[in-house]
Amino acid sequence: MRRLFDDELNDIDANFTEMGMMVSETIEKSVKAFIDHDRELAQEIIDNDAKINEREVELEKKSFEMIALYQPVTSDLREIVTILKAVSELERMADYARNIAHATIRVKGHVRVPEIEAELSEMGNRVRKMVEEMLSAYVKSDDLAARKVAAKDAKVGEMYDKINEKGISKMERHPETVIGSTDYLNVAGYLMRIGALVTNVGEWIVYLNTGKIVELNPESSNLV
Image (cartoon, rainbow, N blue to C red; front, side, top):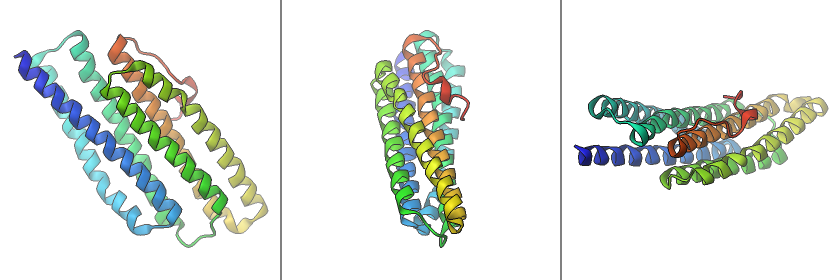
């Protein structure tokens, strides 16, 4: 019975990590599509969102089945609870990436601001790397690494503030950029929320290892 449980737990671990990489790739593609004004890539992201949703449902179903069948306790139960919670965070990250894709389609043809787009690209890369580093922390069951990744979210907040300031300034001085700059602010906001969700995953990794529920970045907890 124990061997069956371990095999199934390893299976959902692998599927969770695979879903995380799917989400990371979606974030990368969504920012690239927005910066490159690539409507086809944006539509691909929107169409593929259902696959990530399906993966979330599959993982949740399997997790609940394992709880009912094996009635795990202590660390085994914490691992399943961590997956249940973290998979929801991943799905929400994908939703924000889909929102960026929608912004790409909507903003096509409007006046753009290259300097802000460059900063959005940098912000997107930072957030994507945070996702990948947090997945690595999960695979290694490393709560110290999770804390370090979560600490990087403060920089994401600073980048958002900078883009927000520049976007508003552009709208005030150049009214023709209002529509495009509004989308810049929205996209930056989506990326900031993804960063906050990455921090949430880190909190569940800490719970997995210690049994304690903590807030790694209280300032971002009200963003998502």
